[in-house]
Length: 155
Image (tube, rainbow, N blue to C red; front, side):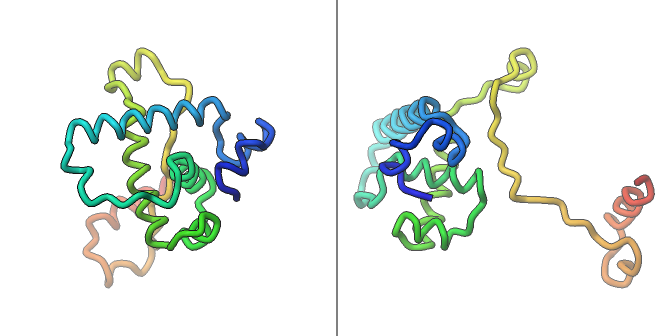
């Protein structure tokens, strides 16, 4: 993985392979995010107080977030690539994943059903845990055990 200044000169195929977005879509996402952040600062001027200048550019922050969502590396690896600490890397990911979700405004459910979007970003880091069917009774109350047992009996 490289920083944005290094990968923006790559071929369009290589850029899309790394990020999952074309260069035009990536720039559009950066512009929307920058506009959203500026509107937030105007709407709430107190959010500007005490903010230090970030070591990373806006493009690098978005690249970090999108790269994490596409490849799921550890934050230690991402921090090494962007030459920041692991905790700051997590902070950037948390902040910009929220901002990206709000900057890319989605219509309500009715509009989504009538006009389906071309692309959807889904974060699938949380997966259901399969629990054992046998021998769980002494350790668990049994409320969801019944549902899990029914699930396993059908398959």
